[in-house]
Length: 83
Image (cartoon, rainbow, N blue to C red; front, side):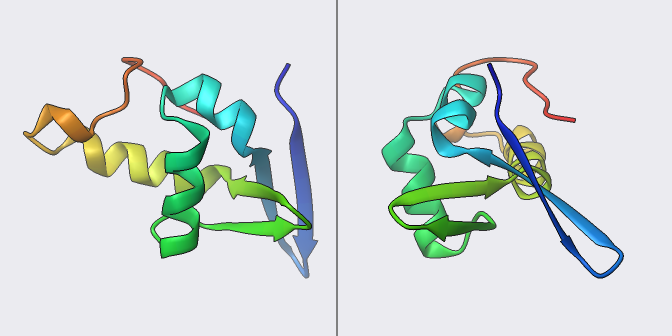
């Protein structure tokens, strides 16, 4: 089950997903996704000890990686796209 959380800031709505759920979708480990969040390579927020990942940020990151020729940094699950 995918848990989505929406946060409204004025007219803008952001959708967040738990790192645990994102890990299952894209095939990266939870630790790696949290590291990308801490480094600012992925957008998200931290609530207590739990990271919430911005869905649009994750989709953008995966799209950019799909263009990279080096296959070591690509997700393990092919064709994964989050709407």
